Every structure is written in structure tokens, then in C-alpha cells.
Image 1: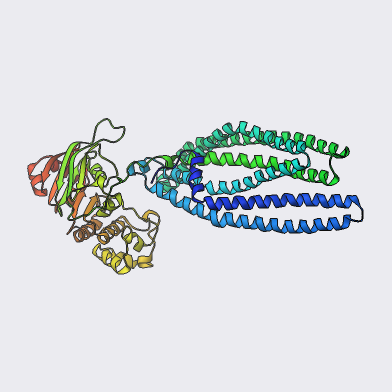
Image 2 (image 1 turned 90 degrees about the horizontal axis):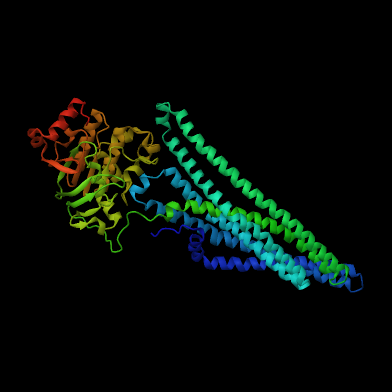
Length: 585
């Protein structure tokens, strides 16, 4: 999916093209509606003029105008309702739905690296800012009607008096000119205000998400101290925005009042010398009274639109940022047949890091082989897994699964071929059954239950009120660590991917939970290629091979017993974990 434009008008044009026929229909209906409304004013003035004559024919003339007024009034109401219905039902609802889908899809397409460097609250806030487009278009629909009203009023006034009509049109131009002068400072302040609002909302969401930790560490006052300066900046920017808007609105009001007085004097003068009829002066008075107040109202709404445009442009930032990792145009689905994994001459360094994690790294894992990975913190264990899942791209070299380069296959098929059980299992505040079925299509309750039984999760699930329909709570807070891990194993069993990654899956568990997890894992790893990272090195005993990483290189390799007998780095790490009660150092 291509990035969105950084500027508002190119961005707006995307959705305008999608719904061009609906927009054209609304435009034509709006012209009809506004013309009929102004015709009502003209007919009302003609009725007044006919009554003023007071002769024998005036009654019949007045009645004809009354009937025409009634017909135009009814038609204008019908046109107004049709245009509003058509705009809302055929355009606004569809545009809002399409925009929500497009924004969410683009946000999900960002790389792991991009997402982890951004505050989730700020990203959501920016998405909400861009979602103001339909609301802005709804306001623009009203602005369009006002602009059409100005043009039609000017044309009809010119038919009465070219000077008065031209004066009204000139008035409209002069009223709009100060708005242009205020546009840049208003846009600048609005963007700054929107950005600060997103920062504040992101910070607040971060605080709410970590509130238990904040309370445990009694850090509430410190969080307030960091939040208050941000709130103060937001307050100052809101004040600046209001002052600029207030100054513009009042300037426009003064100009409108002066110009309206001059044009009205001119109209009365023409009537006094007989240059225009009574009906004409009534029409001029009605039109200018409504039209000049409408100019001030239009300027106010345009001011609001400029602020909304600035807000949307600020929110477009993550959606205008190209995706860091994308599928090649010729990418095909992975065709796994065993799960053989190869790392060939891999060079990799994190952005901004002085030293690379891997340089010329090579590794071959046979199909169905169970490989454990050990090493001190920072040795490259988790980075290796991230590269395999294509969360990051290597600087050079290639990674293959069953002989297929992962950069030449779709990311979707790659992720379907690799199941991950992390140290901290990701849980959704959904039913337990939904959490087990996550990532697997077309699975029924029987399959879910069978997977849970193999993961030794069925008993504790059935003991809960609601069973498989019980909710897991926010991030799985209603489940213990061992229960969450067994649900993750059930999820992996149900998915049955050819490659399984265990990323320190038992490091945070007590001994009783670890025993159940180990039994569940035995049911899982029989027919898969397994890569297991472990803090508790004793959990690697049943691996076919163990690799010991040190500074991005394989320094030792062998079975559990072989590595212990060597007395090398693995033996020292194992001895250290035993001294620390089974925990890695």
C-alpha cells in the first residue's frame, strides 16, 4: 500500500476521485437549491412591489407571485432534503468507512521497528485527527452552498443594478482577503496545537496502560510533574489559536458592517431617484441583509476549515511515512516442506548502533531439527529471531526457509509458517476460545478444545465461569502467567506451523507451572523445526543441538551433555544459572 500524501489537498483528492459522481450530483442539487431560495426572495419582493402599486391589476399579479413563491419554496425544500440525504447516505458514510479501513490497514503495515519506536497513544490520536476528513467535508458542503449563494445573489443583483451587484461581489472578495492574510499563522498555530494534543494524549495513554506499575513504585507525583509542562504548552497553544481566530473574525465583522452600510445607502439612493422600482429595492434590502451576514458566517466556517486542514496534515505524518519493510512486487507465497532454515552471510546492525550485532553470520537448521540458543544478554539471540520473522531487514546476506529467500515471499505467508511463543504472551480482552484461535482460520470449538487439552489448558479453562467463553481480561490480566503460556501453546498447536520459535517461554514461571509447560511443549514440538531461546538452560536438555552465541557469533555448539563436559562458556552460564536458582545471569 502506497503512503498517503503529506499535504491535505492531494490527500483529499484521493477520496474526491473515488466519489466524483456523488460529488457532482450534490453540486448540481446545491445549485438548484440555492437558486430556488434566492428566487423566493425575488418573488417576495415582486409581491411587495405589486401591493405597493395598488391598482386594479395588482391583486392578480400579487396572487400569481404568491403561487410561484409557494412552488419555489416547496421545490427548494425538496432539493435541500435530497441533496443532504444524498450527501450523507451516498458519500459521507461511504467515505468515513473507507477512510477508517485505509488508515487502519496502513498503520498495521508499518514495520515492527517503526511501531516500537512510537507511542501507541500518539499513533491512535493521529489516526483520529486524519479521520476528521469526513467531518471537514461535511462542513465544506455547507461552505459550498454559501459560496454558490454569494455568486447567485451577485448575478441577480447585477440584473437589478450592475453597480450594486458588482459592489456586493467586491465586498465578498474584500471580506475573503483578510482571511488569506491570517491563513498561514492560523495554520501554523493549529498544526503545533494538534501535535501537542497528540503528544499529551499519547503520554496519558502510556500512563493509564502502566498505572499498576506507577502505583507500585509510588511514582504518581513524578508522572504528574512530567505531564504538567506538556499540558501547559497545550494550554498556551490553545490560547494563541483562539487569539488569532478572534482577531480574524472581528476584523471581518468590521469590514462587513462598513461595506453593507455603503451598499445599502447606494440602493436607497437609486430608489429615491427612480432608477430602480420598489420591488427592486425590497429585493436589494432582503438580499444584502442575508448576504452580507452570510459573508461573515462563511469566513468563520472557512477559518474552522483551515484549522481542521492543519490538524489533518499533522495527523498524516505516520500515514505519509513509507513502510519500512514491504513485499517485493513479484513476491509469492511461501511453500514450506519441512522447515529447513538457513542464515547466509548475515550482516546486521541496529540504527544508530556503533557496532553490528552480526557480521558474516552463517547457520543451517535442518528440517525438523530442535535447536536451542543460549548466550548472555546482548549476544544476538532475540535479534536472530527478529530477522527470521523479518521484523528487521539484514544489512546484507539472505535468510531462507526451505530454500526460499524470505525477501522474495509474502510477509503474510512467512508469518503463517512461523509460530512464536514469547516470554510474555500477548492476550486480547476477548474470549479464551478467541485467544486460542487467534491466527488460525476455519477452526471450530472441537479443534480449539483438542488443542487446549494437548496444552494442559482444558482443566483450568473449564473451571472458569463461562469456560471457553470466559474473557481473558485486558492483556490477559484475569489469567496467571502459566495459564497464559498454556493458551499460547494451544494457539501454536492449533496453528501447526512448520517452524516454532520459543523465546524464553518458561523464564518467568514457577516450578509447578514450568513442569506443565514442558509437558505441553512435548506435545507441540514433535513434527516441527524448533528454535528455543531459554534463560533456564536446563529446559534445553532435549534439544538436538545447542548453539552458544557470544557477540553475534557461534562460539560453541553441541548437545547439552557435550557442552557441559567441555567446561566452556555454556558450562559457565549453566553454573551461574544454578547459583541464581535457575535464572540466567
